[in-house]
Image (cartoon, rainbow, N blue to C red; front, side):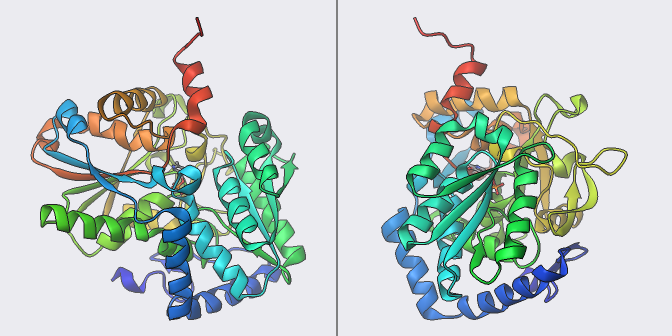
Length: 399
Ligand SMILES: *Cc1c(COP(=O)(O)O)cnc(C)c1O
């Protein structure tokens, strides 16, 4: 039963665990112990609820998208509007939870890794709110590509540290953040951005994002008096998808579909579809699926959406895949780009490129499956941040 997963050692079946240097084992165990106390502490839960409501803007609407349903031949589809949250995506749910944990543990400094900069911005935001020092590690390559988010973080008072090792992207930023944590563990809390990493992060992040599925469940039961047939969400590290899926784990009639970044197509090798194409391996402190080459080196990934461009995935998703609780599929850059335009025109909602992957799968899904289906799709974030990328991909020129 999933309520007991992960087990006390942080395993979801054979996936998960704590593959870290010895100096971090004690820190992770202390974090797991403190979190176990916090999750049953009414004061902690009240404080989190307060900030989610009054600061971040929860609950988010569950919007019945009839124009989209008509366009795609789906009986009924609802959109969970995480794009309407403060900072524009679901990441703030997790950051508020973790900064409250940092406060409980009397830490004065927080660190984070970031790829596209979304998790860095959410972390810098909560650090400003709680008056903590904040350092964000970011690949030098990503800093170049995401200038606007780098400036946002600095405006919020964070220090952005360029990482020049390896491929100079997200996976190297995580390694560097871990290194910093080893050195400064007494004062520092590591705010991890997704349901990957060593135990207890996959558990903590899942629980903080589960508010997405809990609200969706309540909202849908009120509107439709029944549970959905399908839940659809994009999967990078897997936090918005797990947040949506987990509260429905025991409802076997509810099918889960996770959509990965197919990039230029799975056959091209230029993608980030870890569950569709990866194999079992250890990355960033946990056993899960990873994308690696014939020599066991982590592969360079590609996706038009920076938030999905990660060669690993959370261990609970690997467990869902192997036990067939969820199905994982992929869509290409081109299909995601079309989905941005489709949702914009049919519903007047411009989604993030990440979220557009989930929406694109609705179009690919066989007609016989969707014509009688009640679906919920997670719109994990808004598209504003992606406009330069979308403009370029559409070959838009100002006249
Ligand atoms: C970061 C991000 C994602 C991918 O992260 P998950 O942990 O897989 O949810 C998806 N959508 C948006 C808008 C993001 O910012």
